[in-house]
Image (cartoon, rainbow, N blue to C red):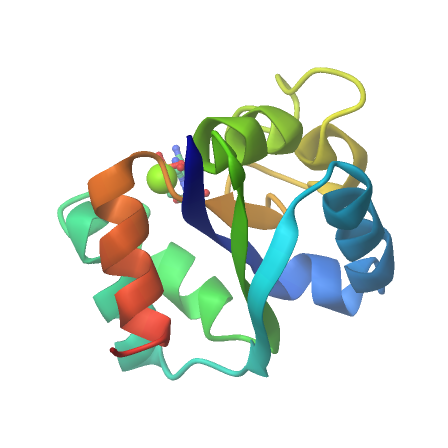
Length: 134
Ligand code: DAT
Ligand code: MG
């Protein structure tokens, strides 16, 4: 089933100059890029995006990080896009991510882990709408 997911190249990966490599991987994996823009989130916008994590001990640090520099936001479209993109990213902690995954390749820490991907159809819809208000 064709579906859409929200992907973000996070500030650590933009600073590392691996935007091109990550987009090349995305295209090579067969996704359609249905939307793409570079943004610098305010602290409030980062807090809004990660609102589900507001009670977590890492919320303040995460939203400081996500508003610390430019990010690249994309809508990826394809068969099983949500799960497929999460597999290509690898697990949250780059130290535990499998070789060949983006977080293994480019992540630095559990917080500075290079990319984001939606985790379910409802969150994908909510996250896409957060950046691409319909
Ligand atoms: P994911 O991004 O793999 O969906 P998540 O939704 O659990 O992971 O968390 C969102 C982001 O919050 C994650 O990409 C990085 C940060 N994060 C998660 N767990 C963390 C932790 N234990 N310490 C610091 N940052 C964390
Ligand atoms: Mg998540």
